[in-house]
Amino acid sequence: MSRIAYVNGQYVRHADAAVHVEDRGYQFADGVYEVCEVWQGNIVDVPRHLDRLDRSLKELRIDWPMARSAVQFVLRQVVRRNRVVNGLVYIQVTRGVARRDHFFPSDDVAPSIVVTARSADPKAAQAQAEKGIAVVSYPENRWPRVDIKTVALLPNVLAKQNAKENGGKEAWYVDKDGNVTEGGSTNAWIVTKAGVLVTRPAESGILRGITRQAILELVAREGLTFEERPFSLAEAYDAKEAFVTAATTIAMPVTRIDDRIVGNGHPGTVATRLREMFHTATDLQAV
Ligand code: PLP
Image 1 (cartoon, rainbow, N blue to C red):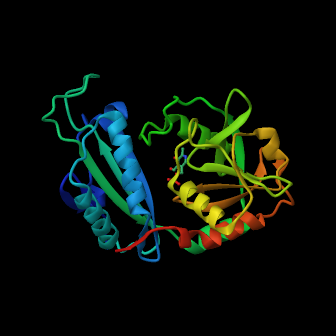
Image 2: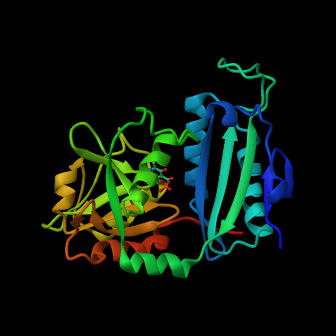
């Protein structure tokens, strides 16, 4: 079966899916995106992802490429047509195709939309979660508007590549005050030796993760001791547990930060439990 992508109104073979060379996403990274998890035949937290997409679009003054309900329909179609049961669905919207010029194009230029989906192996992800991942710290060097989910991910690419070349699966950005902001494509969490779950507030320095939001609700429901405050890299080195969250990872235990073993070197009980319970705190839309 060949993969299918949705590109500006058409379902096309993934191998043939293309946008124009003067698409502003390609020329200027002038666009935004969302990634939703597909779990057991359901798309996870679509309303929240589309709310965040709406916010990102508004911040950049890009119009919706079509009605929100139509976008929702296309997400389901692309998942279905690719027979994805577990995996992810990706949506990207850019300011459209126009002669290269930094100024916004005229109002008659329509935004571009691309939707793709792909399968992932839940067993491999689970095996990874049972082992934990290593993260590698990296100086925060991104623009201050990381709250907007733009496709301008070059700093994230470089930070994550550095992590990979140093034996890690994720980068942890550290700001000028020594505090961890977030991962290259995840939000960052620790559990202190006193058993307090800590993550940075979403007011500045991070993307307001949809997975983070669902986990926060789970944490409240379960009555876990919790603080939303900045934490330093030093505090993370000394933590009992650490983990990251994203639609693509759920809660993924971190067992090493740089050359420091976290806790006892094994995935923590809090992260493991939150991972197990995660989907009870999400909206599930059957495809
Ligand atoms: N932070 C960054 C920089 C990300 O790129 C992502 C996801 O791509 C996240 C956090 C986690 O967000 P979400 O839980 O919505 O996937």
